[in-house]
Image 1 (cartoon, one colour):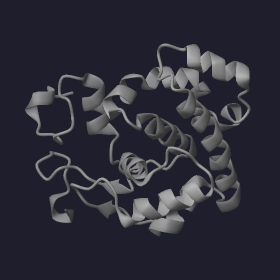
Image 2: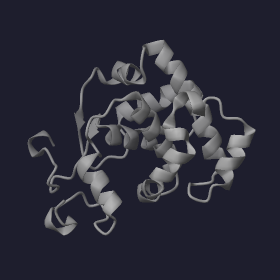
Image 3: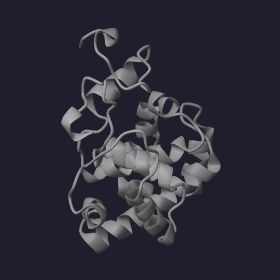
Length: 188
């Protein structure tokens, strides 16, 4: 990998944090619609509420361990004992509301998978399979609409800003800064 300072990246990317640089360069904004990944990113984005993405990203591997590699069937069967273990795990963000929301949202995610055949099919019902190229935003009509629907389904920590970040992370919204070496200049 090139030294971080050799390439111009999005302004938000902390070049001193190797995990952040790798995430920016190899993952953020690249389409990944694998169901486990979609759940992982939804859970992680919900933990970001009120915090920085960098904080969540630094704990990502511990979240994977703590949440059984984001296995939806395991998460959907978590009981009080598992919640207590998560609350005692100093390697993750120990917010009771967010932990309970992750479990609750996972159950709704599963219902959506059953209803639509996959969570990605659900997202496509809003996106029509399109990628959206935009920068400088934190919400959009798309994130508003998905957020509103998820909240109607009783998901928690899925406001429009969180959903916008989620859509950027999974590659539905492509938002690399114009100066970034990954920018698709003609699209922005």
